[in-house]
Length: 279
Image (cartoon, rainbow, N blue to C red; front, side, top):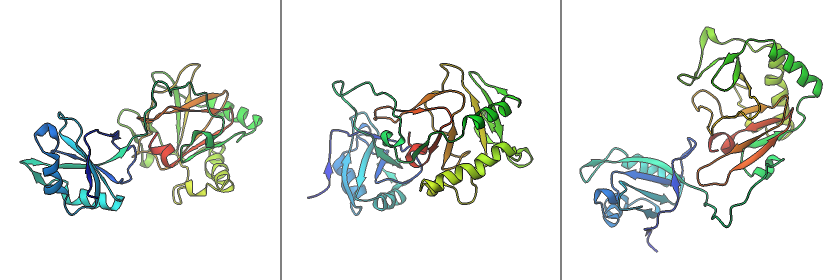
């Protein structure tokens, strides 16, 4: 059976990570520019191992193409990006399919998960009672004695390297200071040991380890809008230690139902893989 041309566009979006996928978005050859999908198929895609073409609506300047494998999509991207078609320069980027949207009848109020496994998001680990009540009190006393930087809705402290919010980068060179002993013990020994003991040692960066800490103080009812921590500034694994009170972290992904995870006091949340890049 030949690859199909579908008129009803499935849900595609820009990947929320840097890994290649088996789907491409081809801009510059869509129905909105007067391009016939059948002509695009024969003139651009013959010779590539694709499984379907999704032209979208008559107003769109792009199409989506699904391939047999990530390698097949990468080969097409390499060959087609920047080439000319119908007098225009093609822009080819990876895409990914979204999770199916729930209908109104399926929508339910979801309470916060208490286990990371219940969230069903690859890369999430939750360690409850990671520090004792005594250690929690000592950490809070240490933090409260340090100078704070005030932002719009919260206060922060930076250790190891300061994150510059204006242009979203970490200071380097002389601006980087060693972690205080009390925090260094957590970052360089306690957290890695916990990951190794749980079988999650693959989440550790083999060279860098955990070398930067940001302390965020959130008042009652204060939170942040949905975001993914800056790719260029932070590594593939981020951990979050909750102190002083409970909270819930809500994970959002376009086209997917929200997932809330309860973070009790003294718990350590580990975010890697999809939990770091895609939600």
